[in-house]
Image (cartoon, rainbow, N blue to C red; front, top):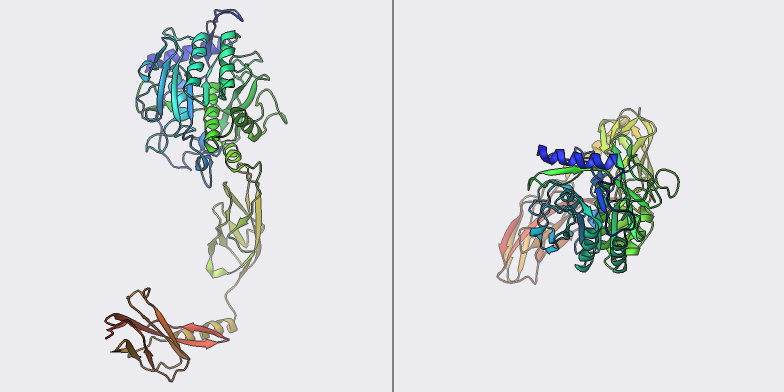
Length: 547
């Protein structure tokens, strides 16, 4: 592990010191050129906490709408049915977070096909593969952006740890020929080569989305393949639990950057263990993240072309940095939820309202508290505020605490979520002291009326030929009776009811019944006031077999 970490650190140091060009040997436009990684590596174990405890650790999953409260990107698409290639150092194909999703492999250095030839010697490719398409819903670790994707691993790193463009070009063509609709390349170099550009053009002409790391030079220098026509160039974001996302200043920034994506501690697979996870960052982590989103978009609507998919990703990005397009953020911070919703729902924006909350509430102070339970379309988290917290305070779970008599207005809001617009609603709450004497008297009267409606007693049932006769004792205070019969004790089969509107009548005959069947009987009283009946409790259930 120490040897592995030291090797990764050395690679990263070379990237930073040489502007992302590790041992660049071939002049621009020449036969071949070498590229460099764009990632900082480490290898922590991952904890399996819940949403609230892991909100910051898995910021790239929760804060951008892949998962969380309400409808999320994974509710619409998971990458199922889409093939994606990770062109890199290979991958740990036995890793628990990768094995089930890997469907093919190719070593572009030795030109050997099969997953047996794509072993990852340093970990860069394993992390990238895990970020893009780590297996989800398997009871282990975390998940890639597209948890049900078909992964194709392409190794282009030779035994010296170098990624020559000829190998990468060969790998691109192989991935296209396998039917991959998305290709992720977390490599970059400063040299343009014709064979590399031709391979990229081959992919574009075959309707493939190519996502490339923009580079970590901290300059405006061109980086390839992100600078080639038809690719999506990606810059990386830092994450802070208080301030959210901001651009990483080590990113290459020029007109080739299309979107910015998380590039701070994204978890992928380890190359030295089949169960441990490893975290990566910078544009090498950001590129497979965007590639995963592209796979989700195509999974949501497989009929989309690569150009249409790219357009959706750019147009749904959240503007950041300078207004409009800029060379640090490109079109903005990628928005997986909005992109997938745009693809699935065929709409650019959807208005919504808040339901499940009354226009006003009247509560007795003795109630102490109650809970608001709003509903809305789409996803997001509700926020709550009270204009008079001395009367009623509300927390961010919708729990309202009653403090004293008076009125308060409680506002419920939900922000933009994907393509669903913000919404808000205000309800008026009136809090009163305990009831007056007359109110108490009315309540007591209602209570006495309820007490008066006692259960009917003395119920007997006599069977006849396809008939039965029910008798009972008169109940004082009742205006009448309701008699139920049925062929089962739950009164769901063959149920019949009869309303006896006079208290004097204490007998009811049911005819035309099914012979040789057992019937169950129960009775309850009712009182009538203002045209409305109030029923008492049912009597004990009796039964008899009809002849």
